[in-house]
Length: 147
Image (cartoon, rainbow, N blue to C red; front, side):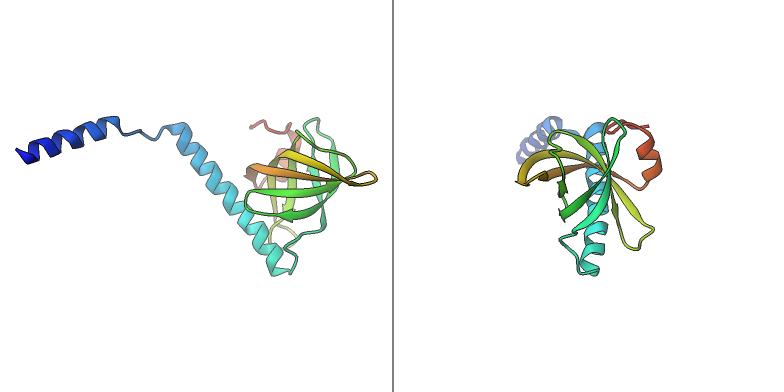
């Protein structure tokens, strides 16, 4: 009698358990890929003694314009950039060195905050949205659009 109750409870639990949909699996894979790419960049920064990466990086704006800004700090979830103007709300492609000089990790970054810190100098904080290792292909298409 007790096993019947247990099996019926287990059957109800299994019927009500949420299933993992294909979009959530894709989202999980995207986040894992993003975290791994950020780890590579951070590891390269720590190995060179520059965790607060104050170095120039190339960014591509949604209209296809390329700019050079300074990377101030990087973490597993985002990046701080120094620029001559506010980048608030923009979706940028950012190319960061990962390892030796020939390796580049390309991130799609959403700028979520911006603060003026001097005359024509802004600190912009962005969260990583996606990562890729194809800088040339990414620069050829507008930000946020996949091929």
